[in-house]
Length: 238
Length: 399
Image 1 (cartoon, rainbow over the protein chains, first blue to last red):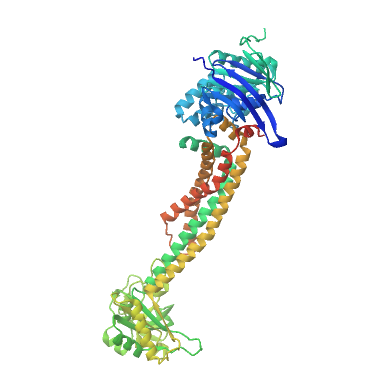
Image 2: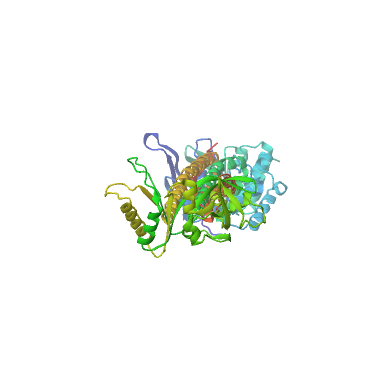
């Protein structure tokens, strides 16, 4: 691994609306994330953390500033180029799971591979592997409606992992789960991070953020403070 | 990539089977209506053309017609026939015909039929062959002998099966005659049954014994195909006007049918009617297309979140567009296929019901199918474009 950070943000701002109705969600963010990092972005609602997540996930572009991902300046890319970037390097886990309804777990997990143009046999194998990894191999044929919330989030994680992304972006992954399921999910993420995947977590729950090695606190569109040196997994309830 | 898109479209359609089927009904009806109309139109054309072909080819038929000033039309006479035969170039056979409805009796049975006063020349001109026996001799034609050539329908109805009718006596109203032959069937494909229900006698005899006048009903002229039908027709008009002493400016008191021109005219009229009716049927196809668009728009709104997921995991805008477009086209193609099957049954049944031949046309079916697919492209494009332009963040937030 080179010394160059995976993600490097310089002076990122994001303004919604125009004129007097303009709202500045991000007011100048400098942030650097290394390969293999487990970072948490914390903050109250309205602190700009979701906007930050959308920009980090290449779903949105900053109004100004430089976002370099693996040395590529994302703000200069077209919509389709950003899609290809997401397809290749990013995996998403959302608060609301966002699985396709009436679609089996296996087919949900296969979806990103479909867009990569993989053959059926390859898709099946990789999807099963990802489901096994999150412990849902036996549930492959179940639709989201037949799975519990925790299981659905595992399917979502499997879908994010199936393309072997460099970064897993998790937006409030435990927001819809009870504490027991939340811990299971966080332990799963911790394990994945140990295996080398960079994980960026957005949360407003300190308990969840405590699993990360680095915690970035957002407030009013700015980074308030950064806590480094948390050991991943240190917050496991003893 | 297209294979994957097709797979996604099929999954989507399968998951919403009821909605998909209801949506395609419009296309099904549209395609079925268009194909059925065109198929029946083709059948009708074929049927009419057969009837016209029964007139004989390269044939002109002249018959008296009332003019506007309500004078009685002047009937033709044998002199006119002779004049045409002698004065018109390119003519092969010319003959007059007169007929009357009669009761035919034989073997103690009675049958409603008609007697036609004709000649060998008439049979030449109309291309009527013989099944059994012989035609008239010149002496029989000249004297108006009591001999007759019966039609196959008459043979079938009042003659004993498997016994030769030749030499048998029969009675037409109160006139007796000897059967000398049976003419070949003029009926084609179930049509023109009437033409076979007829008894031929020498023209002179029919004029004397049945109609009581020396007039004839119509003149039939067959001409050498090397000559132009329109030129011969014009010469015929000139000749008949002269014989009827019509002044320039006076309308013709006769009408002439050219079998070839008639065939063409009727063919084109039916073809135009077919196109018009098919176009009206096509409107239902259009309505079906609008139905597809409507349901696709609903689908896009309903699946906004799904589109957001797809975009987030890296689907390109054109892939999303292609997916929705494929769904619309696949729906339409299904509709088209079912429509073709429906049209096959429908046009087969209707052709039977209105007694026209069932003329299956592959091009019509293929074109209708492609048109239904085109409907999918046209009416699927807007919803698909709408889907592809969604902002992934907004779409993911959509409830």
